[in-house]
Length: 183
Image (tube, rainbow, N blue to C red; front, side, top):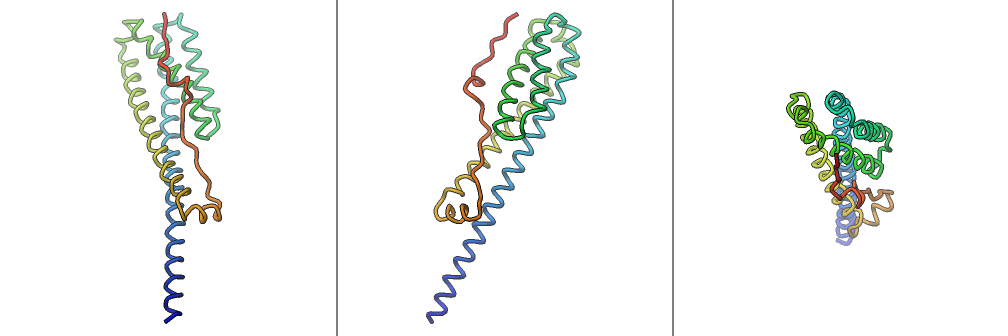
């Protein structure tokens, strides 16, 4: 009878360890998938920028500083480290530059009426929504995973198996301010 109790306890422990390990693996894979979705949307946004800049160039030639800032932000985003912190910094610079570029549409009525500009502006706006959703999904996945890593008794198993906390995709305080656009 004692052997059956010992066997049952060992079986419960083994089942728990397997479930905990599989849960951590699922969480890690979900984070990697979510990060991939952020990466896809950020690249999509980067790919839209040359078309948008070319469209604006014809209407706002003397807005060279704004166009140069967008191109510079795009190039920085292409070279940014593929980490949540690195991508968040590049994302901030890109968002600020794009908001100034899109604000040019208000200053140039002919540009606002240009179908290419309107289509690109709409596509960029949709992409920004996708980026925001991908960031939220990534951060939700990180929260779930990090909670599993820190929960008792999984915390001991996770440390033994060298599972590590993941960082959130966060923006700096400066990025939360509304950019000022002056003409």
